[in-house]
Length: 139
Image 1: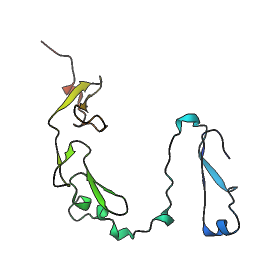
Image 2: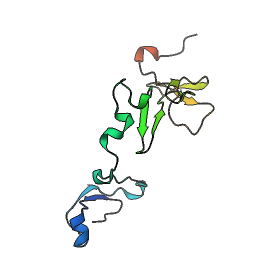
Image 3: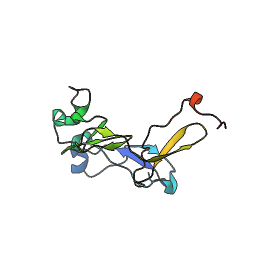
Image 4: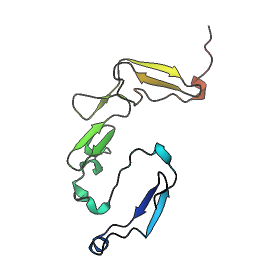
């Protein structure tokens, strides 16, 4: 089954544990990933203990789950609001734009990076990909 950086999927249920673990019935999802495979997350629907209706991020009454302006992340215990561009405001739910960032050209789009928060890899401003706004600098 192991093929130098492979990921396989097999059923794991109570019956397979009682009679001993049998991985002969498996399917390979990824082969020969080599050393590029560093981490992966194992998820099982059976291991999810929270009732479906208890996820505040799934609430759609206002259009945004959990009362978040942009994104709501649920870890099974508490919702957390995050902003894909900009930073989380003091109220913990709305996003506000960064006041300082650097814009640069990637030839096919104009992108941005943080000047103050190098640990944040999200662009502080959405990329500009409209070809009519990208062109040579005229003096």
